[in-house]
Length: 245
Image (tube, rainbow, N blue to C red; front, side):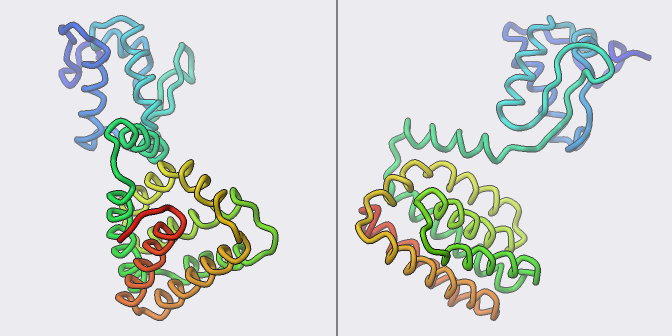
């Protein structure tokens, strides 16, 4: 039986048809009937099953691709039909960046949210982190100590360290949110780094703080790690980012 006779796919009859196509695909993902790696039907099959134009199907797939939900392969042939990708972190960061700009959030609000997220992460990491994860975090702090790091390279290492701590908590949502937050404020972070007068001293100080946080995590001292990461973030934004307590 073809997809056109499948009762799970409903014919679209409302005006903005690409949104209805999008809704049906999203429903299947939310219900667990489509998972990462699964292939969607081809364009032709979706057109037939849903009773919409090819343009509507393509528009829905473009939206899902921009959200990092699918890898879209339009056209016909053996490779036609997109796959569920689950690469939502980049899109979440972009969405958060735009939302922050439009809503005009105060930087202090973001700092408060980041502190709470990182406190959760290091507390959990102190109990959950594996040897391989700790080894990777140590390698990042060692790389931070290398002389002559420019602003962009240090920011990359700094981001990897904090995201790595979130991953070591074994809370996948915390890690994705941390990645999105870091992506959303990258421009502001780079601008703040550019204003630092004694760059080498700042790098040395931040790296020492990272090592202290990691030591507390590695030794299972979760509450201490949470206090250290709070002080680390708050002090940075107060001295470099201009955010007060």
